[in-house]
Length: 323
Ligand SMILES: *[C@@H]1O[C@H](CO)[C@@H](O)[C@H](O)[C@H]1NC(C)=O
Figure 1 (cartoon, rainbow, N blue to C red):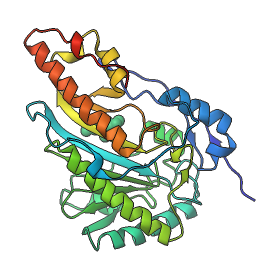
Figure 2 (cartoon, rainbow, N blue to C red):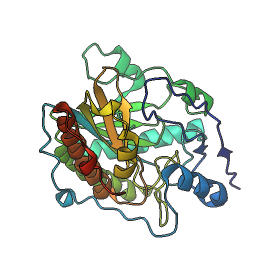
Figure 3 (cartoon, rainbow, N blue to C red):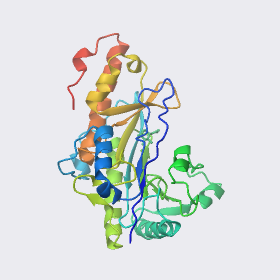
Figure 4 (spheres, rainbow, N blue to C red):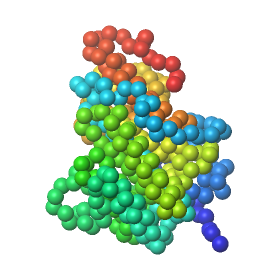
């Protein structure tokens, strides 16, 4: 008999002053993929409210990176770096909030098998969390202690058992295993070439999808929800495309909130002042290419606006219609 648990964790909505569109917590996570079906009355409403998307039509997937227009052509005086990441849940296992230690270890073994095969084409190595902190060589990846929200929602149970990071030799791809989701693929680039970053994610997520299918544990996909993962804030594509942009004037402009809403983008303040992290605000309703295209086009427009403001010109005619 299977018992499905629903974890509803009320997290504090904490917005430090100065943060424009902070990552306001969605407030809940699912115990497993089936929770989204069993408790659809709850989760559908959360997704609709948080992601501003009516769940009715079928979610589609598009990993054909050739369909992306631009992304290798940002003005480098403004765009500093970029990151594309994607999360996945594996069928038949509870999500990290709820899975047993045995399940987590099985997930680790599955990831090891799949990533060993991936490494035949893209050399890389899987490090357990312990190995990573012992290794003196800097891999550019740090696995910190669990965060407050991970402690609260159960993700940090048995920490650091079966948590691991796979890092490609060339540094282009990092895969996190058993952290907030079963798998998280991340590509970061210092040249802000998001077209390349997106291509790297597309190529490798397709390979991993095929490998997991062969291991008889496909990634969880539901027709109306797309890729199903722990957080309702990531359901759909599980994709975040982000660009770090240097902006001095635009963040203080009175129409900024309105512009970002219309572009369907989010803008977070980073550690350094004047550098903002711009990313897709939603993950459901468009496909992977669609969301990345929103970020590419949106960042270009925001940079154009910034340049206008530098020259003390108006930006009103650049304000777009709702995307
Ligand atoms: C930018 O924001 C996105 C979306 O929240 C996140 O996934 C990414 O890690 C952030 N990038 C940096 C460099 O902080």
